[in-house]
Length: 428
Ligand code: PLP
Image: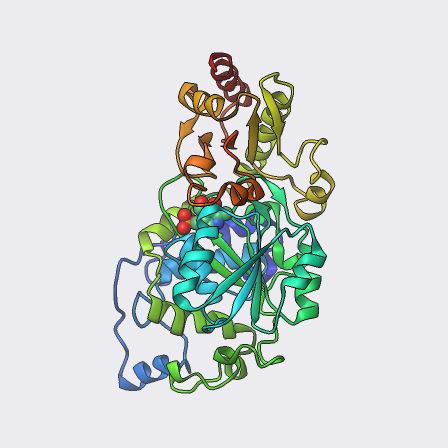
């Protein structure tokens, strides 16, 4: 059965992008622990380097285990092509690299993972890039922030840490009108809960470290290209639409059409930036992804129960879970994430900073870690950790003020999760 004949998400997450190993018949995807691949002869090598034939050259560029994962994620997101990277942060830089030149900017949502905020403000400067941050609920402000040097619009589908839902359809309409690609970080939702390409995204990025792997074992990232953006239309993306000196003058869009971005990311992005996923990491993520839908269902039902319980607690001021009818994002959540709004949200405690620290210190089942999307329930005080480098104002805009803790609800029994929160809240 080919990928095109498989329609159901549960089937794709187990089978897409892989076949029994042609050399051995191995049913599970082997870990191809190799750096290089023997060329058949000099002509074969030349054809591979010229992109006239697709095959393996060197594992900084492509590797069969990593390629299997890229194909699997591509199928789950409904894309045309995908590339895996060494981390989610690497995926973000790799997604923007083909689009940007010094002097270019992106327009991004204020509601982002703190590390992304720092990457977009600090790392960007060294590349001569910049970022304008805007409240993406204010679509007029998003439109107004776009100028002649803007090359992409960036947001998270479900934003970390607040669990806010971005109106992807509305933002995609603005991006379309401006002739710009929309890049969506779909880490917190996973393709089971949200498929940004169906809502108009051009590129989807992931930290596969989170729900896609799901067991807290390896870092990784992915970029999925919808294959739908016309890179040649505006003249703003010369690396894709004009002869590229970094790859002996190839015009990627002219030569490769819908696969232009993916081939560019491999032939230039991975070759020159080297942010490559290793085959061991791809193996762990392939193992995790097989149960993605089952885990996401449990994360979501657990999060709903826990959020409802927390909302009724007298030491809790606010719970941001979009599954709650009190959330301003409740209706939008049903449209953007029809299968549920995930396992991530924040809780504002009436006792402020001290109560947050007390809660974190008294929990026993929850792990206090800088991660999300694990099978285990996790907690962190974002303001003093993941969002530490931000100003008070930026933290508040990102939903990470000092009286707020972030919960990533795991797949344990909801009653046990609630019991742990109950005893810890009693102690603060
Ligand atoms: N995007 C989101 C939403 C994240 O939460 C994170 C990490 O927490 C990243 C990207 C970065 O991913 P990684 O840690 O794999 O580099």
